[in-house]
Image (cartoon, rainbow, N blue to C red; front, side):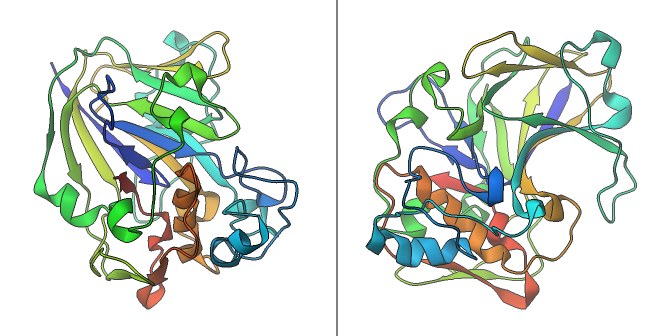
Length: 301
């Protein structure tokens, strides 16, 4: 069977089983979009008011009952995070797909490929016809993917819904969830500059990965099933034989197109809202040399 590379870009938290759950690794994409850029979900309160940067809310909001319910940049729609599945445009067999509409074709800077994406908004993502297999993790993953309990030692247990059946997840809290079927997990290319954290942290300053990659055996004509967490008919993206790459991402439009943002380092704070009780004054990412490391992947614990 051929291999498919599944890349994860942006705010994607890769979760290890905590209490004997059936998944070998689960990837959660936190909802971080909506009116005025507000993060949706269970940690948002009526008292939450728009703020300029997410790290302000994480640093100061907890003292006023706001916890980490905040915004990335409340003044620009381009700062809303878009959860998506991206495919090479020519790899998509639209005639064989069901219930999906691709975006217009676009290019990633520095990449000659033509891509389309399909939006996720409270969905479970599965690779159809893939046989469950052990998951092998390469050393690069541990070296370049920040571990939340090391970044913020005070980071407590996850919100319980993140470990249970995806059908019980709140689609206003979870934009997408993907349970790994096995395969080989590794870090993508290292970013050119180091990223560190300010505050009480055990995570070293390091060059983070630009993405995470899962190599998995798939049928000759892969299919991607997208099932609404709230119920409803599943949708399917059919890929043509020979397709070898998809991306599951949770990024701003600017990040996808490599446009500089005012405060990309603040985006990492979205991860703190995954805790049952978000930590107070947790470490914040420091962006060196104009890096856009705020949309790094992460791992729990």
